[in-house]
Image (tube, rainbow, N blue to C red; front, side, top):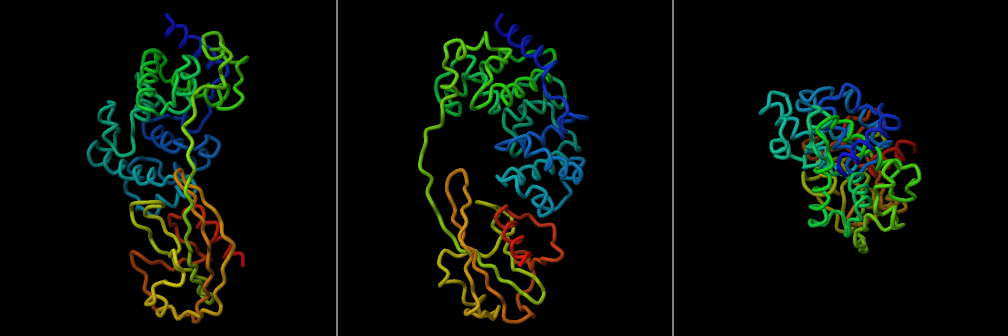
Length: 351
């Protein structure tokens, strides 16, 4: 009985207050929904919207995305972070084109076999992209269900997540599944927010055990805290002042900023590659350190010290190849660049 009351109440609220004009809701297809769901992982809606619009303009179909090169895809992702998402997006597009003739499979099992698609994302593709019954459990849904049922424990712990999946599955209706899916996400993103939830306005306030027992602030339980370690690096900005170019190095496919272009790095500036040092004919007396900046990842802080190294002559002997690229500050190429690199390039171009 609760499941019917829960979904009916939520859908009535959605009809009057739900979000219906998000870009991925217009002409919804499995492809458009999939791209939005991947972008929305770890990222707020307002941040995603302009990225999504530019991405869809450049890659309007799964075939367009599959046939693009890595750098073009990463360039259009740059700034969203968690770059493994973009690499998996590209791989999945290629697999959908090769194995499914450009049409997304319509079963949870086949969808979660694709890179970067988990159970919740697969459920969203089914529900929002095909209007069939699919069950989701994203961060917003976890928060709503944790409060409604006073679910103890951090939601990402396996046993807690199993309990939340049980609630999510039992509450998801067959009829109007797409609207219900959007409704419960909207509720979590607006009224049932992480801090200062608007309980008096919530359509589920009477059903919500946390609200009825004045324990809303307790749920969902927080992740056990830990102190993030601090790492440091020097980023070497080799600047060809005559040609207004800087040297970029492609990072390995795995690890932070995988496959993105960055400045050459060293943990110890005194031990930098002497062969490259010689090739570039550096003038050590003109080297200048910029103030350090901190970039925080989910599992550590990275303190970056940029080192500006003007080159002593215009002709550079290092040839372009798959590892190295001379980036033209006046006519930038479409390359995948992490946010700190983009900021440093902008600072350099403004000198």
